[in-house]
Image (cartoon, rainbow, N blue to C red; front, top):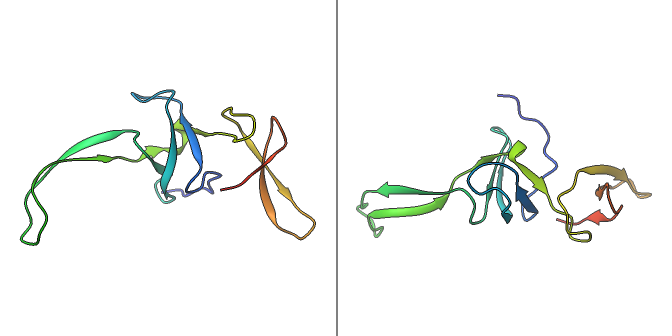
Length: 109
């Protein structure tokens, strides 16, 4: 599969654009680059039936977050509080940073 470079990183705030959780905002827990997917906190919750294991895990219905596609989320700016597109900027010391296109503020992860 084609693994493109993602501008969304772990601990970013994102807004869900499509699906049953449209409009909700959550924190990115995990980025799966090979599949172009992200796991967002309290978004796309699914229930799985799990058998009890011989160790100390209990069986039952487990509720967990399922990954959603990168194209269905958009990064949120902490300064202007809007879903945004970003641009990359190179600082004087050669470091690349993400910059909000609306308010030109740097985005810290």
